Length: 403
Picture 1 (cartoon, one colour):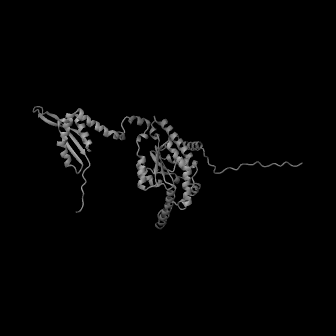
Picture 2 (picture 1 turned 135 degrees about the vertical axis):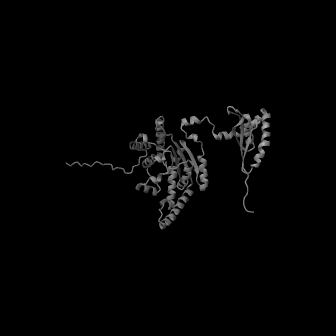
Picture 3 (picture 1 turned 45 degrees about the horizontal axis):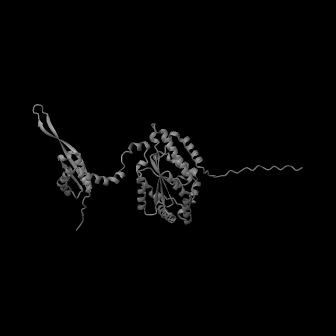
């Protein structure tokens, strides 16, 4: 009888470097880790995030300082690639690839908890994948929950409603490759001089010297990051910037993109408190039509007063304005009783506005002694009104120089 042959059970080998792609799992693990380490009431993230994305060579580093000035941010930008300093991460980056989402999300969230970023920061290079976008969305939801949780407490200032801007700098493939290779040449030249002069060396990227690696890096951006960045427009303030041109033209494009109403960023209760006040741009849109309407009403309904004010301006104001044509500022004082009527003052401002000037008026009151009681020493005064008009306009340019 044959001895039965027993086979050893097949034991599955552990799969190394298996990356989790479930955003909910990644976020929950990261959030729980941070909550345990820092404590619930210390999860204080940035009020404002500028998510700066773009293809390699699009000028993110070049334009970061300008963006920070435009948003009055003083803290150093968070450059995600500089956070990824593990040996494995370095190998992936040098090959033109991207580091795993779990590592990136935790490093970024942990960095955002640092006190210097409490008011806001520029976040360069995040998010780059759909998983990172979903983790960001879940972070913003948590921040909104914290805002509601603490809004009626002394800690409310630490949990303000977040404002998120996504700014994408776009260049085409040809421009991206050219700029990457140009950067490589500049780094080589810098490091050559730095070695001779004992100065610190700049980082050398393999992709900045190999056209194929530079092309592969751009393709990774197009295949994996572009769609993720596009999805941000569905939720956040989204700014798409053409970064193909000169530094000056790109800065101009960025400025135009960031020129928006701050009401979009206010806490809802703050906005409710001020929203009844008109927005300047709305006033400007209709200001000319309103001025015409008022001028016509003066002529049709208050003709006598209107022409009396015009005559005063012609006889009393214009000669002084002419004498101050060079500086572009004339000051006229008047005690004429016609200006005791507020409508007359409004007419002066509107008449000058229609003629291209900017006029403002202040009413000063002076006490004029009229009599003295010799027995009591009491002085009786009358009040005199002095109307002080400032008329501003474009002054004359004087040419100076040799003959």
